[in-house]
Length: 339
Ligand code: SF4
Ligand code: SF4
Image 1 (tube, rainbow, N blue to C red):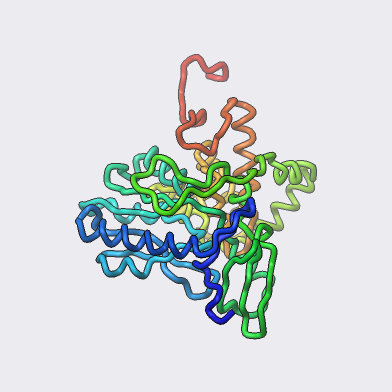
Image 2 (spheres, helix red, strand yellow; image 1 turned 60 degrees about the horizontal axis):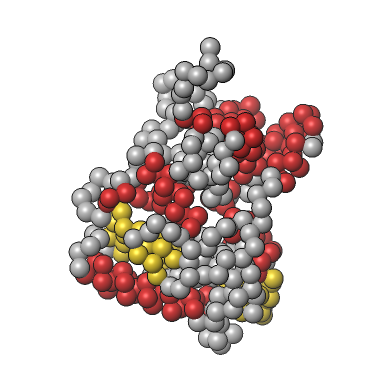
């Protein structure tokens, strides 16, 4: 690729709009603005992305000094939500800046609504996002490490040691990007980069839920047995989840031991059903739990099944939006099911 293509150097939206150089320009603007915020004392720290260990990955970058802002990156591999990192910052004085895409903003709102993050102590820097690549999908396909990656003319262009591989970008995006209704975050304190043109978002039709429902009771049990049997109980899904923010998780306490340490399929059910019910009506549909799962358990099928129920039973149009009423968190004496 000879330097002609870098992750930051080209961007093509889901809808196909080309924007060569757009992402590197956004990266420069971001570094400049963050440097200014830190130098002016408006934030004590900034949370953004830095280069990862491979060309397909970025990692969270905590920037404490203005000169550190130069290490920030913005590219089509900036998938992780940074919202949950703010929990560790709530004890210290001063505002923290954080970079948010539209989907990350929902996670932020969840943490604020649950009073786990103080909105007054966060400076939200929004960035329009043309969709991010699911690195896991690409890695599953290639045996060799990717040394350079980027997007050109709607294609994901990957340089490995043995040559260049081109893949249709849209097929390798995170599933949540295909459903994104507005790629530009609103209600933020500062924006970087230009507005991104929206694309025809796929409706959330719960096709994945219907697929499991159609298996029938015995088929569903066999399906989830197979999925849960692979769970390592690493808790990555819980740790990344903005709706799972208890200071002490009931699944890890020793007294009473709600979740025995024994690893068996029935205990895996206990873990997954407890977690799914704890986030029911509060899940922001970010898909981070599924993205970080090291064994690719399709956790969103569970979350979306509950989302669908909430939509149908309580008439909540967009149950993934934290502002919407949360029927499972409300009490009213007029409830017809009240006993
Ligand atoms: S991230 Fe995956 S493997 Fe880890 S606890 Fe969650 S479901 Fe199990
Ligand atoms: S359950 Fe998964 S999709 Fe829902 S908020 Fe938590 S991490 Fe996001």
